[in-house]
Image (cartoon, rainbow, N blue to C red; front, side, top):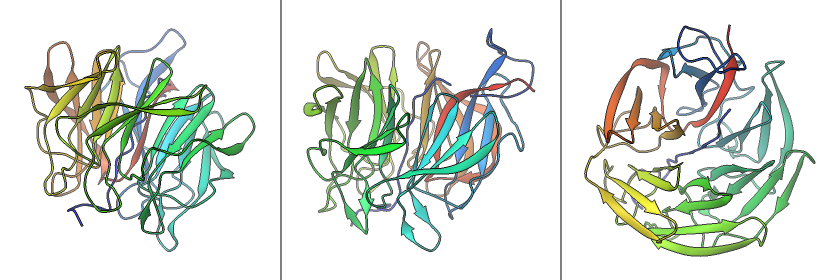
Length: 319
């Protein structure tokens, strides 16, 4: 079994969250924030970082009703969803929770067909796709779509193979996933795409380095792939994937340190990551300026260091 085989990453590139401070307010009076949910040791915490002001906002949102780690998260229509994951007493769980930002209240909504953790969750239109992961200790190829409007989980075409710890994103209404750990504990370098209308998967490329529990972000017309674990060690390497050419290019600038089981979101030319492990769990937040090809340590730190957490980017009302 590879090192760190029970840890995952959840990457949600959704443009929607809130907060206070002096920096960067949208015309609608909302501020961009990174929201970190749950994580290591099965915690309930919901931590909010104001991107523009580079500061944490204590008690901005209520904690999860129960502790969770290794789940996924997404945001649609000003509501945050936390999906599956690991519970303290029950192993992998099938529940989906919804946080309504206007009321700041968590509710239980639909359930997946089986409990899963270490999966990838991405948002496309009014649907959340829940891809792969582990169920009862084994990798699965399950692809389920949570239809938010109908509050219903629908079965879709399975992944091309059983994978956990993949990373995913959406670009031009196409879902992409990369890497992952396979049932025989080998690590994949494959990149697959999924078309929602045809319900079909395609193999579209290969990474230069096989990895899992890594990060993946769509930025304009390019997909960035960062960090993770190659089966024996944590990585600091980065690659960019061009979906048109089906080609991955190694980037010369590494991350600030080897990092896995963390979070990445994209906004306005920057990639933001928070938490994760580089041997020990961390409370650090970092940003990558794509145009300048430069990483920077942010001043703020999470209230609780963690990994195996989930994240969304959203805009919260100024307070």
